[in-house]
Length: 350
Image 1 (cartoon, rainbow, N blue to C red):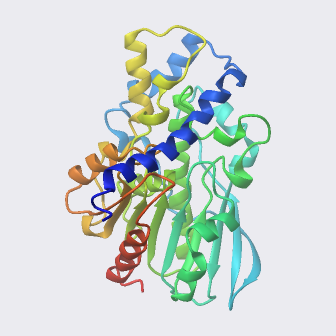
Image 2 (cartoon, rainbow, N blue to C red):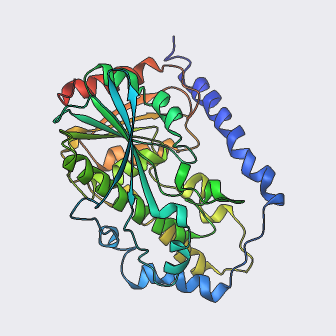
């Protein structure tokens, strides 16, 4: 029955996504106008083109080789184990010298945060969770990723807080969406550089803290993070992406925003190329493809399904499970659990 109704249900799920996408348009007249000089902005954009990063995305990313020093760890009881809140100095520096000072000025973002639910025994296999855009609050993430269930299956669980999220978000207007700015593509590129740097630091730190084998699960923007990191490193055993973003050109690309100056065709092409050069579609994974799982919704408009299909075609051999519905409203959610826990079993984590 569900198969016969799949297209209407995909449409219905997409309509729910559409309501969410209407909010920025409704609030746009009330948004503070961006103050930016055209020449300065385009100089920032052209840095990534001149350095060759847009043609060779992997060359843009610098990953640490050693875990961060002097992490701070606060512990609270959790079931028969404990929940750790781990912080450390990020160590990331913006690649673009033209906005390095501005990027470093967000003081809260200089401190990296990770939550860890642990049994307290060395060598436990660990699932590292990567949250979505404008999320990351630990209690919410604990529910979304079903941390208690994973813990009771014998796994340790960790949650990396993305730059500019939760405790890392600067105070003041606009703080909630500073990570992804289609009207400031250089800042978004540096955000991607930092999240890769901090994720590598987190995995190195977990190993230093005697964690066992590590696997990644990311949702939405977290799926983008997991897939991109899988093209840069093989420090993890697997990567699972739930309703993942694969390319941000839709629905929030540079063509959807207005700038305080006119841009000709050539400028728009440069801006769009820098906005999407770090998409996983331009890279290939370093971990075995049968250890990559994608679970997506066919009617998704937040993280458009067309990009997910393109990734599954390009990364032939990865596991792909497609649900009915949209980003938020899914009509066969049990399929997601079956695919995810089956994948964990096949990866010999449970």
